[in-house]
Length: 134
Image (cartoon, rainbow, N blue to C red; front, side, top):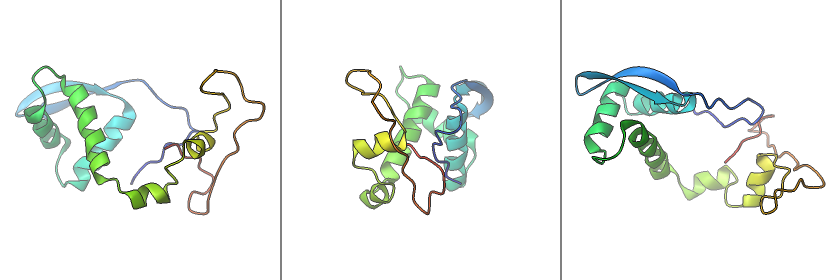
């Protein structure tokens, strides 16, 4: 169910509006398609609906924060709390150089200049041909 960030696919930054019910009141929320996917995944993992999950977020959000930003922060904190050092090791986290290689970055991040050779892709048997970011 978990989606990997595939750099071979085009990133969609367009916001998608959907109607949800917060504490019995219908409202519209605009999130990135990827955020909707993650919100659905969390609701499924927690055996609840998006409506109930967003109602909980709305009850716990700071008074001056928007519901949309509170949903994004909740999702970040949810997955941050579930991450482990073992999981990071399996994903080959812990080296920014590895991250640049996986992202196939061919620009020097300090200068903005193009590097003389493109970053090589890094794959393993469990990744297939996907190049993951993160």
